[in-house]
Image (cartoon, rainbow, N blue to C red; front, side, top):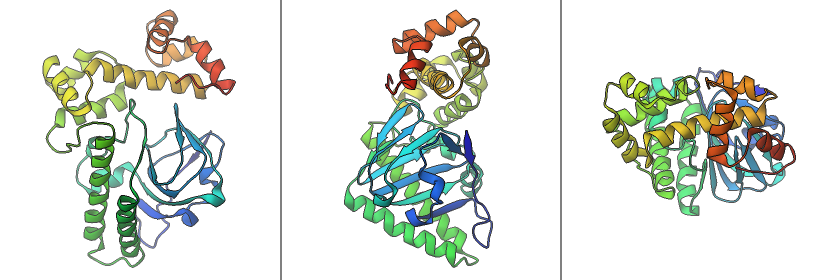
Length: 291
């Protein structure tokens, strides 16, 4: 599988973010072969067509669509490039954590590392126009970088990300809170890094230094689901990714994801999807979506 890396030396200064229009995106970007990137991507389509297969989601790319992609998520694009009009915003994780002096910043945003909700929204033309005006200011600051440009870039980028978080949260009836639920954001970060090896609620409660009750209340308030459901969503996402995008057999996947036995893995998958891993893989290979 191809992996595209962030081009941090694109400008005269080293900047771990990039913004531009479709004409600035390398030709390979919207290709239909399976690939991923090592950076965050937010793509704003003023005009679109076709669809995006993003991990286990099939997203229709129509006008006023915004797509959110976290690092290393696998995707294929099926669009007619000549009919696309879009802006993009790319950045690496270290850019967000250092730029905002907050290692949890990307986990505060509902649209990154979300395993349960669609990874896109459709917005009004007025909202899109407002964002496009900010993109122009951001690009102007980057292209004519001055000693105080970093402050302007930080302020404008923060506005864009928080605005998008509010729009996304409103669309899917989630909490738009980004400041006062550190337990929930820390839990989301832990799941992203440790879910392949541990699915025990008590383990995460101990790591966070809280009780199961406190953890569950925090997750319910922020994400609208229980701790157990969020753990299941995260591990099921990993399971489906291995089934769809690798040639590993059931025993190998079960071992990689720390299931005690292959039959336990198969039972977990069937209980949560209604299909066996084999049925799920064969359906995908035959162009049938069971997600």
